[in-house]
Amino acid sequence: MPYVKKTEKLILYIVSIVTGIIIAIISYFVYSRDVRMADYLIAIAIMITLFPAGTLHYFEFRWKKAIESKIPDLLYDITEAQLSGMSFIRALQTATSHDYGIVSKELRKVVAQIRLGLSLEDALNKFAERTDSELVRKVSIIISGVSKYGGDVTKTIRSLADYIKLLLTLDEERKASMRMYLGIVYISFIVLLVIIVILLNQFFFNILKLAIGTTLILPQIGYEGFRRIFFYATIVQAICSGLVTGKLGEGSIFAGLKHIVIMMFLSLIVFSLIVY
Image 1: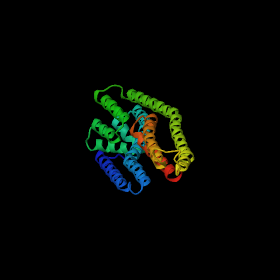
Image 2: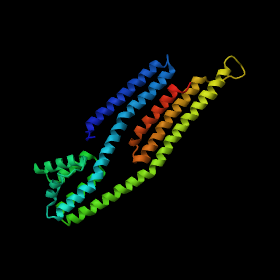
Image 3: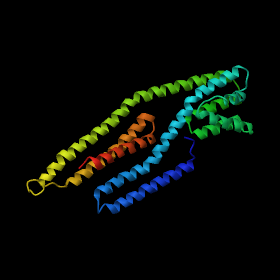
């Protein structure tokens, strides 16, 4: 996914929020005629509000990681070119003929900007701004500093490539260790839905059905009341579990938005198709 400008993000977020608010307002007018539909519309409003932000964050995260994963290979190739006698900028230009996936397109932009008269430092800073990656920003600062103030450029770049490769390896190991916990969160949420289905369909539905026409049992609220309590309980649980999952999996609260949408969608399916 290419870089998305902040203004485009803002427009997308505003549209999704306004759409969610409109659906929530519709649910208010539907409530008097169909309580269940009003509840479902509230859930849909929340999902529509969160879905664009969660989806955009996911694709941007994948895009950044695809770029970051190719940075060590790019730096190693630049180092090899420098060892053959090329300057850094010449080595950078030579690297454009190699295939680094998504990075190749961004690299060609950097080289084109340098040819048009932009300094290496400014071209690398623009590259860091487009990717919005902290890792790329640090690499740009280090390379710009070495090129500007002198030093053993080849040795510095190779050490930098080794360091980045180590960071990426550690990040992959962290993700692998976290997958089990992510699975536990989803399994726990599914177990919660199963328990709620059993309680509503097999316990509350039958008990309250028997209470009709008798004075022995006088429930404070009817079946629909219990149903609504459990429905909104699953919504709250989906939000909390989704945020925790995002933090564990990708280290970001915003990464949990897509998990919230997924869990809320599961809740909506269960309550609309399985629960009485």
